[in-house]
Length: 403
Image 1 (cartoon, rainbow, N blue to C red):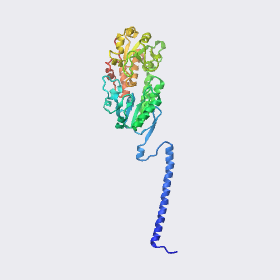
Image 2: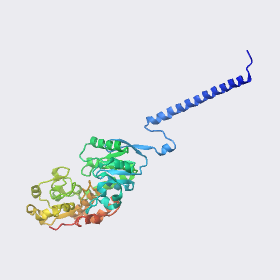
Image 3: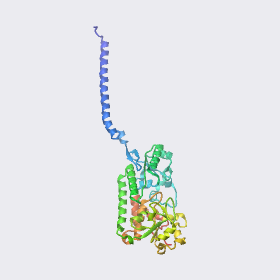
Image 4: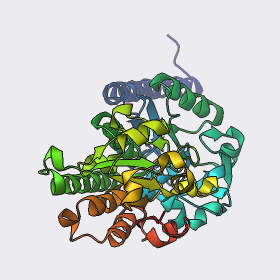
């Protein structure tokens, strides 16, 4: 065999070193892939995408909203818009109104009468950019231009869950922004109260106000319990008969407009003469009111927006109603409107203490209804707005109405 020249020998050695380096690199690569397969597979099976460094800081969370939709949102939400009647109210309850970057048309509307306590407490809301029309008629392009991190959307009343979920999906697809949607609920029965509480918790989790959501829920429960226990032992035969008329519902109404499940009556154990008319808003016949002839009449003072004093004018001028015992005995009283862009629950609770004081003064002798109202308003919306709110309606709330 011929002896290899120096140059050829150097080439062979170089090639050998190169082969060894490639094998080593291949081994490292295989180990890295194996490691990723182990740790990454475990993470993916747990529904978590492994992140490090900057990726970890931007990692989001997934929540289930009030209509069963799984929505991915940023971990720390810093900007939101509220869509639908009452959504912004709940955000104020949670003390998170500083996150708002846009509002719907009702928040920007100039009105002689402002019946939403949260708006009275937060006049700055009028200055935010517009996201669309009220009652959830959103403008996707406007929302995109504002760039919120999350849209908080109350479902449309009366629509099934599937329909509301579809509306939220559509808005999310059009904007590319997470939409967290939920029902508004109410305090009229346990099922609707559970919806309300669930929605507060969903919103609280979304905006990092879970502890405040529980505080609000506990406050409502404690207040309802206090109201009920004051009158729980009153015998059925001694419970007062009552009626509330002029109840606002998508605007002002007259005397026949009522709430068969009016919560203040339920909580102070009064007998609502319209109680057999269902659980939702109802318009009753005047003849029925005359037949029922309740001992006490309460008037939602939002009725004055009708003109001619609304239900109050009817009680003064309608001869068919002149014989009512409550009119003859001067037992007609004004309560604060609570249906204004959905239910103002703080006004419902405040009304209940006033109603209790009127019907059973000995059971509520420690209560000054106006002071109690301001305590309630301060808890929910941060300011004691009773005087301002009542002043919107000529100051006739929580007073006997002269006829």
